[in-house]
Figure 1: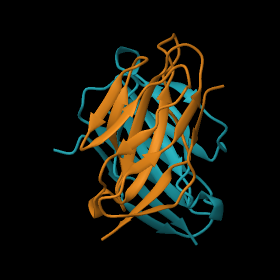
Figure 2: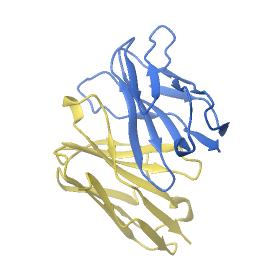
Figure 3: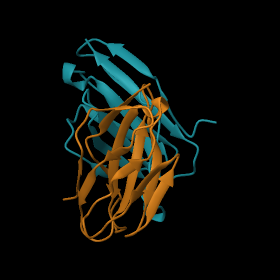
Figure 4: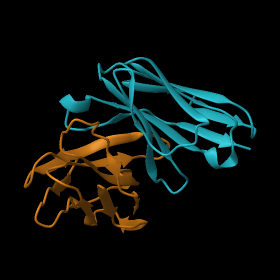
Length: 115
Length: 114
């Protein structure tokens, strides 16, 4: 079945540091890929997405590129802020089929950014 | 306007009790979900409904019973609560087959079983 493997946390960085959170996936066909963010005490919000190979999703300074050859969708940000402290989830949705397109989530990576 | 709203936000109850969580979405989506998030933040799908029809039913104790009166509402009823049911329960919705698979989440309902 489909699966998502995400870099284990927690990750602690200083403000303005470079961030990478690794994510690799296993799926048949051409899934859609997502990064969700969960701020403390809140629900998950979509951060960015990519629906086909070589697409780059970007939002709020975060970027991730859909790499089919390496089955990866790593999240990057050039300069993190304290307000980026949250849990980040990589997820995939299978290629459209006759069944429901449920999201499969990675285990989440806790990011703490120190001033 | 809250897109996906859940009530209540917090529930504290004793073992053996029965409780319900309600969810409503105003996005015009046709598919709704319940996810369970444990203390380590791991998210696991429990149920999914498409146009009021149950389409995903993962391995969940039958003490958990979802109900969808219409495609904008999905409720979760839990009987005979156990300590292990303590978690945050998230409702979500999507466009189903017509969308890219993106989910929109509610803020969660934190259930504590004592």
